[in-house]
Length: 221
Image 1 (cartoon, helix red, strand yellow):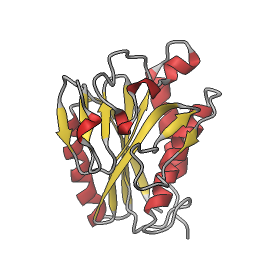
Image 2 (cartoon, one colour):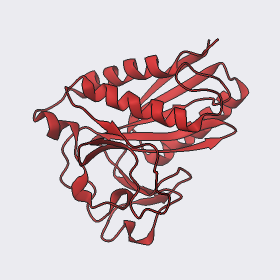
Image 3 (tube, helix red, strand yellow):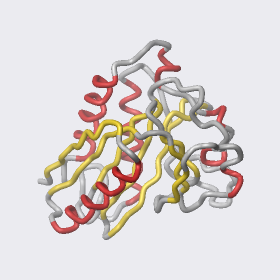
Image 4 (cartoon, helix red, strand yellow):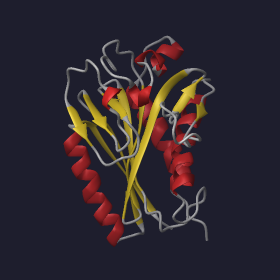
């Protein structure tokens, strides 16, 4: 049985969280019986994934970083909670097999869908982009035509890093001057917008941790 360890880093610079992920990637590679999930928030930054296009940013005035994950331009800010699973894909898990990147993505996606069900929200996942030449990248978690969470991962030595960001609080300045994943920024929504009241972030963190534990902690025998 693999031990799943959570790190709640709170509000932390993106580069600090990335360094922690890379440190844990090496630890998991050396000790495949331990896996990790980081929960955190970031000061405002836009990260450019491997598929980013020039028109993803048109008037963004904040920090920008190029990163190794898949996907296009993604916003991170303190109104979100970010989930970084450091999982050994050489292990077979209860919901996805060894070296099953697609199964891992669907498990991460379904974790967020199950979390939203706690708030009586029916969301859909689009972890697999069917049209590889599409101008827009329909990944992430959606509520109808609105997108509430973005997904993008990288894999090193068969260990995952990067992950998912879910919008929790209303922030009218988030996504300004950018086209997240090639879409208009008007498609983005937040949990607070959907439930129309303020939220307890510590409760949300506990809920996410409980769901992620069920999804990721068990291996098949």
